[in-house]
Amino acid sequence: MLIDFHSHCFPDKIAQSAVIKIGAKAGGLIPHTDGSLDGLSGFMKQQGVDSFVVLNIATNEKQMTAVNDFAAEMNKREDVIAFGSVYPRAANVMEELERIKALGLKGVKFQFDYQGLYVDDEIMKPIYKKIAQLDLVTMIHAGFDYGFAPPYMATPERIVNALRWVDSPFIASHWGGLSCAENVLKLLCGLPIYFDTSYGYGAIAMPSAQMIVEKHGADKILFGSDCPWHSPEEEKRLIESLGLSESEKEKIYHENAEKLLGL
Ligand SMILES: [Zn+2]
Image 1 (cartoon, rainbow, N blue to C red):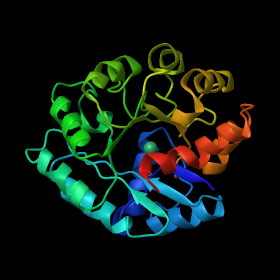
Image 2 (spheres, rainbow, N blue to C red):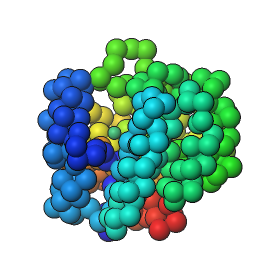
Image 3 (cartoon, rainbow, N blue to C red):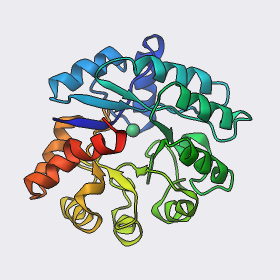
């Protein structure tokens, strides 16, 4: 059983152009899929993934409803667990969080570099509180984002600062912070949050990944790829290289995700 906790796709009409644009912005990434849900689903099956979390981001107020409607539509499929997203500065952000819950979505994704605020911006305090009240999961892009110049909006230091407002499951993606392994080890490991393994292959040094699993614990790490940018096979190869026990790997590959999402 393999659950991929971090993947992306786009509505058919814009899928092709979206992956080309995002890939170019991130420095010439070549997508593994055509950007569509069918493309993603086919690729996941081929890679041995049983179900996958699909993440979209509302990068402005106007887009927010459509992003969550798309997530709800995708969520009807057997192999898909779609998360919603809110634009934190939207006037109706609280109502939209309630709608996300009503639509049956299990979590909310933030990408603060695209959304133009820090993970620990004061504006986020009531939003995290509302998410906890609604019993939703928070997932954030953590660490560097190669599509943007520094400063980055969700570094380990800022995540620690934001966590005083968070009382619900919180996932810092990309091993706790892309290109931030040293501070992840120093500041985030051991805290009651999850990391996903997405975009790790070739980006995190194998000894860093080993130390993170050891210090943070395999029961708070979720398998994820960041497909279409990385493939599940690549991320599995990294995890298989870490010398973990079978039971640690089972937790990472699916058991933690099942528990967290109530599957
Ligand atoms: Zn991603």
